[in-house]
Image 1 (tube, helix red, strand yellow):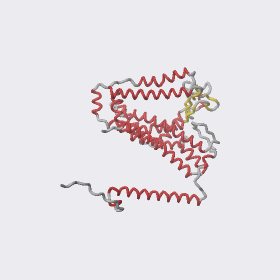
Image 2 (tube, rainbow, N blue to C red):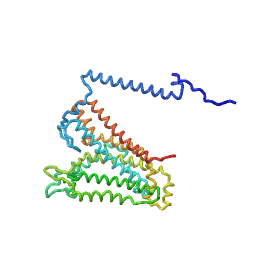
Image 3 (cartoon, rainbow, N blue to C red):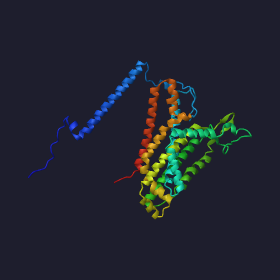
Image 4 (cartoon, rainbow, N blue to C red):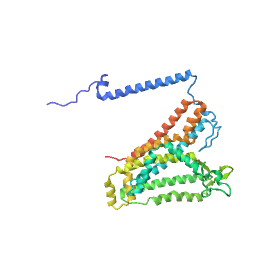
Length: 404
């Protein structure tokens, strides 16, 4: 009687790194990595040697020196005597502000345009098709300049709001739309405002928890709970009640015309508005195509089955089509958000001082530290891009189809 045994294991030999398919790919990758490290080391040593020959060295001490220039849009206190580091932080905040606003607005426009382009109404679908084709086939820089030029030419100047012969007036005595930007009331935070903010944030958490509970009830029990009105009530009622109970801890400072310009309130410069809307409308056209592709990727049988159960078209879109379409929409949507963040560097065309205009523009020219400034710019855009990708990839993992 014979017994079956495993064949003896072959001892490892160096020739197996090339001849054995189990190790060959790892060998080639290791060789490529070593070559890449050698090339990068050579380039780095060459850069250091050339800088030393020119009497230069890589140093970031210039970040502590006075900047000596003003920034028109300042989300935090800043003046010309602040450091280059402070100017760079202001530029970073300006970049993040316009990127966030553009991402939110582009998502809303893209979802609506993508859904309406599939509408059975011929006029609506064709209008959305014209919007998509017109905006995505023209460079975004041109749209930035067009919108900025329209705002500068069409809106009145501050002097048009003065006197009895004024040709323009403020909206609700609180908002002024001028060719220098939009002036809005500024919140003044007083004692008790922190508690008000905490209550507002708690309301947002409550909305998220309720919507999650409603979704769980729908999927597990088949109970369709109202979502819109309870969410609206949770958003407004606790904050409004707390506002009066705490003694109105937040007041408003209204803009007022003094001299040749408005004083007080918050000035949203025309350059920010032009950049915001141009990026949003331009990228929204691409997002609309992503949404349309995601919806069309869902079988028509899903819509027909939902309609046979008596669901209205709006319910079918919200409960059946879009949740499944997200699996197709989210991956390309990540690229669109990254494009918005990187395209915001075109802000210099309309004078909006983002990180490219501060650190990569005036600071670079004043200090002559081109290498240091460019490296910091690269690090910022790399960090923010990887952060956006990581956050949306986590969301993509939650919505993608889970297979057994």
